[in-house]
Image (tube, rainbow, N blue to C red; front, side, top):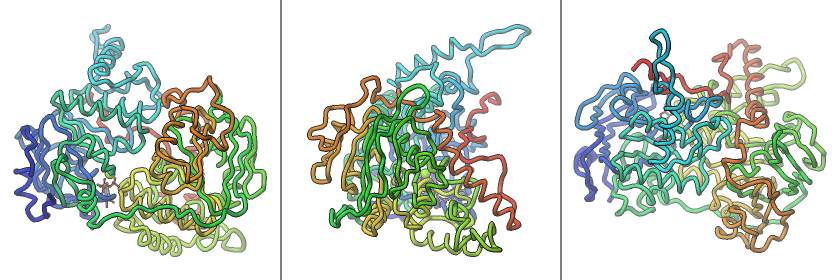
Length: 608
Ligand SMILES: Nc1ncnc2c1ncn2[C@@H]1O[C@H](COP(=O)(O)OP(=O)(O)OP(=O)(O)O)[C@@H](O)[C@H]1O
Ligand SMILES: [Mg+2]
């Protein structure tokens, strides 16, 4: 039931299937440009009250831009927004909130050092009378409000917990509570599942269904077709800023959705399993890591050889991230050894390790993976700006950089990876999420380091780009390099890995060859069940540890601070280098990785 772009306007008023409900929101002919980039072009979208409406599309298709306009963060160049039949002009998010909208952003906007309750009510605090006519924040009322909302919508949360210590799933629940506290009747969720584990996704969907059944209108931006089919009532597909498909979910097929998104069918990429692994490039032996309070990596041993992809499966928060940080050198180890190509690097610096041929695609592409205030070209060169052909490590050009080379290399990368951008001088922070991820992947693969650590490499990228990145990782393996692939997506591990190790409670509890690995076996081991046939499992998980993601701090620990800063340091060096070349750094004081809320975030409720 794909409709062509030309009859969009007619279709907007007349959806194809009998999905009932009055229009809560109508977007009519919405247009938005950024310089030469047309982000939205005559987009029509009707959101029916009490339904879940999925918005899909490739990276850069214009989904986040459209949602930002609906939430008053951006002003449309053309078109009209109607809420409950009334034409609206939002001067900012506060107007949108007043009209009943709430948004959970692709990147969270919370205060890490504040409690859940304080974050939820921030800017709209319950007050009680104080002295001299001043009102105080009523903390008890705030706690009660959070508990009441949490119970009503089935959002499991502790109002007193400090946000910085929470897992991604728990942080997201805080964002949803924040919107519900402000009585949002229309809830916008921009890629809410990109950072969630399968069980967290299930509970989110239960919350979404419960909210819709209670009359809330939900817009869900996602790349994952099975999620759309599982939870939505209607689907709109965008491509290059235009609507290319509208479906009632019950009539839609996965193949139709893919075609509307990409204009083609997508072939699944699969590791052929051929070739013999060569010498060992990474050897981890008896590695234990503590976060100061408890053991987060427990006696892990593993090796990666040239020409193989070793997958690490596990529910987030079971030590995978800390294992990667210890191999990278951003987190100290309590016991054990890390060897790169035979050399013991257990105490070596990150820079030292990278110089030995270690590339990394980090989980947190905005914090660790890129410097958001720098351009695509600068980001593409990060970590390689000191050496040829961009810079020089010796001779009279030492410390200088060639911007010409930097830019021409970036242009090649953009073309090669189909990065949707207005040019290599665009700030990476203004790229769409998936396109920023492509830049990080491209940069790390460019130098043929013998060992690549890829942490959630396809997080937030569209189906076409997943296919492309998977293909690149297999080429990397075929070229004789080793890859340590950490992923929450079992399907990704099954497609790419030669061996899959499963982490649970900080330890490796199961190991499967590609032939042995199945979704069921990996899933069971991830959940802590004894592995069906552990061929290489180390000791069982430490019983004092738990697989509950919320219990193992996923971030906010000392180790995480250290790991956040490793690219920040690199980018500051790059800034210095650029300054030496006669160009000032673009912005000062904005250290990538700082998680301070965006100033445009709707925190400023006092004005209302
Ligand atoms: N502030 C901005 N300045 C310049 N260009 C921008 C800005 N915001 C978005 N764009 C561009 O607009 C286009 C649409 O971006 P948008 O973020 O809406 O895509 P998206 O569909 O959300 O993609 P993704 O799935 O990767 O998140 C992209 O080409 C992007 O580079
Ligand atoms: Mg987006």
